[in-house]
Image (tube, rainbow, N blue to C red):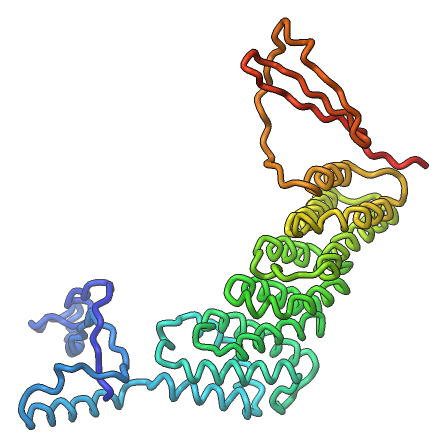
Length: 410
């Protein structure tokens, strides 16, 4: 049963009477012209009226005349209310069949802003599901309505707005079935790199939102997403967004918990490919402005951050299998001229965490105590020298590891 619910809300108080109506007494103006007739009083009600499809149990009380009177009032009031599910059904039909460019573009341009108000569409889950299905099918199949005066530029504008609507619909994922969630993620994946860099950047950001809202669907499509990103990483407009996406995904273990050796290698390849391209570009154009140099430094940091995050995401027993290949790729990226500071720190991290997950904390320095210098031993382990020394009378032992800095000879 449809009812009117009056919900209290905080609104400004009712304006004074003098703002909306004339005084009760007739006064003449200074020039002798009688004043205009008083305007009707307008009272602002401190209420918000909404349409509700559900009834209350206490509405069944009263005699037949009272029930009939309430029903008559309900019917009278509902004439002036917007039935939101019916309105959203009309929106879906317009998205599928509308031919006027002006109407269609106005609809898709403003629909995303309206959908952000989830309370407004709280009773429209079936319509929200059909809206998602209609937009996903149009974008995946690249089949938009046959609009009048439609050209390629307008087509890209419409597709961009439709992706914005889909991004907002991620917030309604609790109403979607598993197949609908997977289709939503696949739509962003398919259109990533399909049209222009602006739309690709939008899809990357939407997929990052899906990583938090739809992690299971992302996990099923992540391999395909990484393959697409590997082809786009050398685009200077997209590289920073791709690397930020990799860093974000690498910190969500439930997405890549079942990754294989080849899939981890694919992630490393994306970051290493950017480092190789970045060094080649720096050699070709050495004179960059200060802002360009800072941006390049930030993106390089992101690439090493992505390598670090994903290397630590690999299981401890499988990490050593990636080390030699990663170091060879770093050497190629530096053009056999020697590893830079970022690469040296990263290689040090590889050696530190290839065989253990030791915590990154610095122990306090201790002063050498006279008489304990004899309790000091040295060992050569691989390419490092390890020293164990007793530094306190209570038996505290300090272990020092010394190893060479990696430099590539000419």
